[in-house]
Image 1 (cartoon, helix red, strand yellow):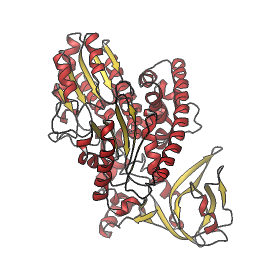
Image 2 (cartoon, one colour; image 1 turned 45 degrees about the horizontal axis):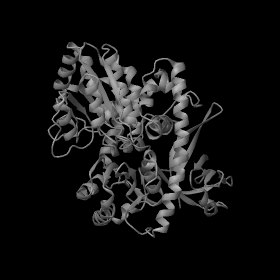
Image 3 (cartoon, one colour; image 1 turned 45 degrees about the vertical axis):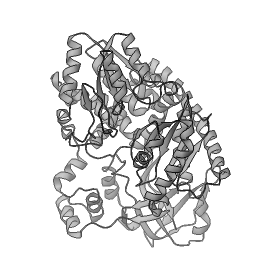
Image 4 (spheres, one colour; image 1 turned 60 degrees about the vertical axis):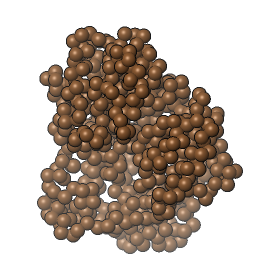
Length: 562
């Protein structure tokens, strides 16, 4: 691990904010590091309101999208809400379809089969629309590159509204409306929405048209918060507002489907981390193991008993998914060893019988083991399909773009992407990708980094600091949980390994004569010898609150120590 201490902001700027907010230097510094430098910005950060959301009509083509939907309703047309099979797609379909169904009955939903149809808009889905007299398709979390598919639909007199957040290509589909804040010609003030977020802007515009306020849409925010958490988008701007109020819905009045998923969780308040690790994997498991339709059925079910039945089925899919990804990860690690590719700049692997539904998870696991851009391929029909994952600060999408001549199609983000290619092009692509990454990545990006916000002393940790830090939530990209460094720390003799393989570390630490703190170091069990007998060490950590038997105590979560 390399520890990177963020450079301290200008002292005058920190002091000015400190005086305006009446907070200590640590809080003021953390705020300035996050780009918050004025009283008004701090007020918006600490006290977000739904009124902070932008006017949806600022998004290019929004007026066209609303006009076409209203025309479809007036003419009693059948509308199909189409979305990807992951969390972002299934929550978006659940959101838009359930909102439209609240006042118009002729709404159907469609999630493509991951194995039969693959990612994005499918010809099979368009044929389904044609066979069922559907004249308008609203595509969510996909479609920005579906030029041929939209042309195919147009030839059948089926209109498209695209709601996407992925990067567009050089040409846009010939749809009635293309809602994507990443369009070059779209001046919408915030371009980091997830697919479900773009869907929310659509229903926000529709609601305005029907004299509804933003407060009428609060019951839908549990879906938006789940998508934001799962899609790892920045927790800034509108995403932060939507995530905060969506978490409140999850904790106070969630829809039956989400309530059924979390009813066995023994926590008073669920955080965005709980959404990432508890809710999202289960929703994802439906599309990975069975079919994304099951996730939509769960999320749009209003009867709790039926939702509990759906949730138990999805729980089984999630258990199956865990078994599969463990097995494939073992096989993939063995392949790296056997291929003698431990010194490569990339990991690119292929096995024809690997389960397509879990190759993205496997790619993430391999990135943890061999810290470098990773792509895992499997057989999908007559082609190979893959999921890519990247390392911090390296844009894997750009690297794929440089190798596009070997690919059939690809799409995604800086840190995650999907693609297909012909089997005969696999080796050419693998060589080209290795060459491109080797040429463009800087060596330090291949060493895992812990970004440290500030160096502090244990004496700085007090109830007021902890209370203010909790108001930085929800955490996520570009608003990560603050990471602190403290030097010359000693264990008080309590340190012991935890876990079935002694992989974790539990200890009680002090610095000089400061108050002591309980601490946990996940994956740091191998550091036990280096801190025994009160040997001093430096540590990077987050400050958590640990809840046990109703008692809440401060606990330091160690990320690394030397």
